[in-house]
Amino acid sequence: MDGIWDQYEEITRLKCQNEVCLVLGREDKKVYVRKCLKIYNPKVYESLKIIRNIHIPRVYDLKEQDDRLYVIEEYVGGETLQEKMERGEVFTEKEVFEIILQLCEAITCLHGQIPAIIHRDIKLSNVMITEEGIVKLIDYNAARYFMEGMAQDTMLIGTAEYAAPEQFGFAQTDVRTDIYSLGVMMNYMLTGQSYKSCPYDGKAGKVIRKCTYMDPEKRYQKIQEVEAEVRKLLYPGESKKKWIKKKLLPLPGFRSRKLWRMVAGAFVYLFLIYSVFIVVLSQKKVETLKEMIDALAFYVVALFAFVWIDNRNEIKSHIPFAGSKSKIARGMGAFVFFVLCLMLIAVVDMFLELFFGISIF
Image (cartoon, rainbow, N blue to C red):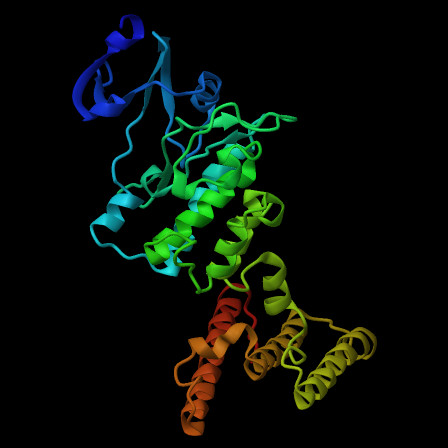
């Protein structure tokens, strides 16, 4: 080969049968991977060349020659999931979910191309984990574009145990094909076996089942649905809507649904509304800055008390002794909280007196 290929010097051959080797850029002295592909889709690799995604190895150069495609792409250091499992590494559900979320980012990028790029060979040996913990989806030899209206793929390709039924000629592969393979891979990571022989029963079992339905219509219809489900399992209750509902709504005093707290909460809110709109605005005209600060200090103290009583945002879990089963220990926790509040008010008072000559007390 000539031209741009003269810019790279071969270092070592990795897979003789696939003609994969490491090369060194003569000018930048960086290490790259050079592949010689016999089965490929040149248009897919042209698209990969312009994609910039941290979870997809970057393609730098392409050259088609003698019915082969020569590719220069990013060198990814690390281990594949297959290599990790072969040396005895066991994945927890949490680790699997974290890996799948990163993979979903790569697949979302591929499926978001126009037309969508279907990887068609998602498996343990095609997922690399770098030393920094970044997940990379590699090996796009089997990738193809989704073509609207086609009855089936023109070429059947992929790894049998990971392949969806449509990859055997029953229908055209689409985004749901990659979702099927992703589910099979999750099961391998958690059990070491295929879904058919040993389906996983833990939290991830529901996701795996829906990914691997024989009928594509019963699977997740897009990768974002898989990501959302996995994120929900990995970070329960942390979606934006749930966070707002749990942390911000309803108001303190009503969150627990306990009658005495709701009655006390309603009384406090009515009192605050009365004092603000009637006492402060109508009867007691705030004529000085000190009177205004005194009024605000009252509401701050009331707020601190309410935050404690309602355990707003689980504040007691951050205060020593407050979460104990012992009443004496809880009392000590309340005292610590009270002292902390006084210290905070004292600091504010010192600031106001120092810069404005005003004291809260």
